[in-house]
Length: 156
Ligand code: HEC
Image (cartoon, rainbow, N blue to C red; front, side):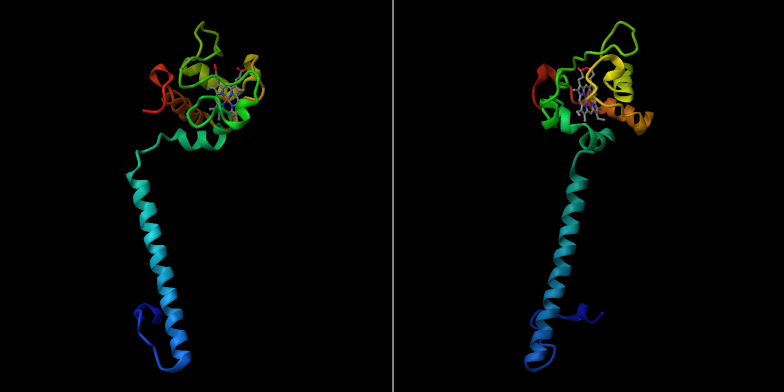
């Protein structure tokens, strides 16, 4: 590739056409360098971040609109829901989906996410997510649990 050897200030010939050619090549190189720099910055930012739980992306894509970034139930659609979703940060849950007398066990959360709110007599806005598959649903349960904060505070 000829452009690889071009340097800023390398006239690349004489006269007006040569000048334009040099500028074009310099611009081309500039864009290339900018792209490389951007790529490197993105890669290092991703590497530096804490490894997210696998359920986080799923949550952000599917659940955040109602349950909110921190699980507070304050996503734009969640605010309009009646009953509103509970505050996941407090770690109190409503449904005893498996009927074992305790609400909010991992099994309960799993079943509510898989079968939806209506299946346990709750708000049908909480859809059934069974199509995601058991593995993904378990990841979501783990992520919902990770949103729990002592005293319902903000993220540590
Ligand atoms: C369209 C809005 C909406 C979306 C999207 C949504 N939910 Fe919900 N969710 C609700 C509402 C409303 C409730 C409260 C239901 C009730 O109390 O009857 C709820 C309740 C829950 C509960 C509560 C269980 C309990 O016992 O209190 C869990 C867990 C839950 N959602 C997980 C999820 C997960 C995980 C996703 C994404 C895969 C999701 N939700 C997507 C609206 C939504």
